[in-house]
Image 1: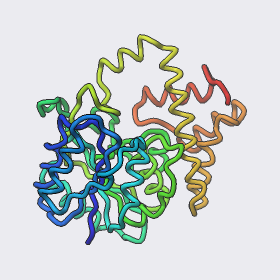
Image 2: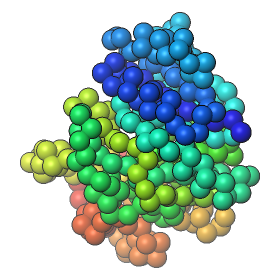
Image 3: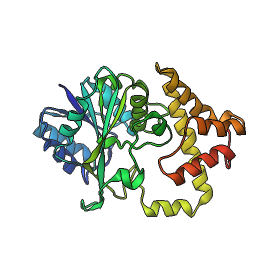
Length: 310
């Protein structure tokens, strides 16, 4: 069994060593850690090189170049670098619990590997000193974890750092353009073509700090949104339209008739007259994970309040 762990780094000198150490402590010991640095200006490349010299399982795939790709292209490049049976995604500033690989791989073995598979878990939110802020990110932020396509179309609950995909799913990732995030897109493909699986236990400590590219929702972030309602509406519309753009890529896959109709309904709902928009939301049960967010989502779709057609 070949296991590739994919890590994208960028100016991560502060916490990177701790994360690599947590990977090296895994109870499953046969793996490859592939790291691509995205043009760091701090000591990150030197830290990576030190671990490469220390551990033959660790590989710095762009040690001689410093081109900035952005996080999605960076992970895509890592995925396509060498073939594996299973691929795990890793952030640079979290801490993996010692049995993360073991727990995830055990669950993965229950599924047909000829079908696309994504397995993900819960995670604990911690501060910079690893003090636990929330025991469960899923319960704190999303109410429940998504395992069905209709859920994942409108809201992502997969945190990339907890995710593992098999080779069948990796083969279906053929482009990185116009994606909201790689973890969301891969979750959509898994739900549409195979299995999206959630394990209800934390396997990592998600470090919340001021430099997170995409952090957990905090009250300070929420307050900033509510203090600028016009910007909040713009943000909602950006998310709706971007998720529709991302979902359109699913129509290039060999979907069942039922799932194709669902995706088509979601990506075209704004093109329909008022009564058809209402019927589409009802018939296909398009919604968010929490009641309030569902109310906002459906109200915007129905009224088109603040919508600016492209």
